[in-house]
Length: 375
Ligand SMILES: Nc1ncnc2c1ncn2[C@@H]1O[C@H](COP(=O)(O)OP(=O)(O)O)[C@@H](O)[C@H]1O
Ligand SMILES: [Mg+2]
Image 1 (spheres, rainbow, N blue to C red):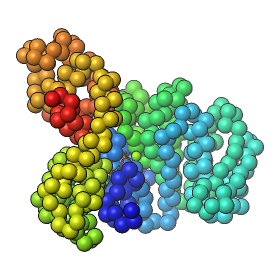
Image 2: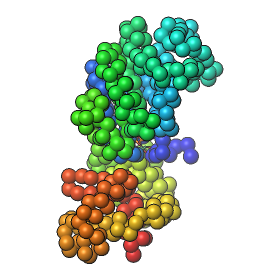
Image 3: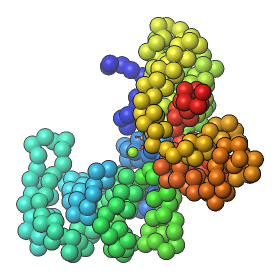
Image 4: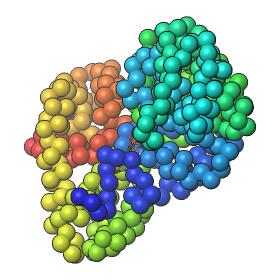
């Protein structure tokens, strides 16, 4: 499909990007000022899209932005490899210049460097990563040295940063990189990731090396008014019609979850011939829920009964989850048990803790449990 007005599963850019002006502004300001930023939200709320959006908006050719994604990074060695590749790929446009930096700054590792013929792909250097791991200071300072030399600033953006918690000796690793990064004058960092608990551990615990490393932004969902305007506009631009009320219904049904809002809008748009009907929205909604049914069934099968019971209580609107009545009625065991159940569901990222109590992270999972599973 070429001209679908909504996009999900890929980074939202320009046309598909809605609002987030305040967050974009803050990121840009931090990029300019050399302040590091930590961006936290559940997955699929738009962190990667936001960072990319802000990076594209930056109009200062004295600042270079590089990205690495730790999604599938499992070891420290891989991290150093990705970091140096990312930094080098923004450090110059001539092969000779990049090779120069490598020789000068990483020479002791006897590097081999190659540049892919595809102009969009990055440089790749091969070093003895095991050796690098023994003394990674040169790699961790590469960005700083290059920035100084070229009289630029570099922003290193690292996606899925929580994955460093899975490295062999995460605490020692964090200490090592923090000690070096905090001294840098020309480099700042934008570290973002889901798994709120792990990110919180790393960045908000006074005992942890990354405590107070930078501004922490807890990214929120996108406002219903913004979705409304966005959906109406995108329908209009593609020759179809939807009322503001209907657009609001779409946002409401998926609780403004960015990924699902785009998906539901898209599925509704596909079912709309010219003018959107209530039925178009309803069938789109059901169809998404059914598509996810298999996955949800597997998720539910893996949950112990008490955890399912707890979810049932939340879906029923219970607020006092550790009260005697609720515990008895939903068979939650003891009140100590209730604490453990909640903890487990938070860690599995099924629930999220909010000021007003636990809520479902996935609105479709909640809807599916309520309408298909607990009936
Ligand atoms: N600002 C935005 N405007 C519109 N849709 C968005 C926005 N941010 C995210 N989305 C939607 O959410 C999906 C997931 O976004 P992504 O940036 O990958 O989230 P994360 O990095 O937090 O997992 C995107 O594919 C897109 O459909
Ligand atoms: Mg992401």
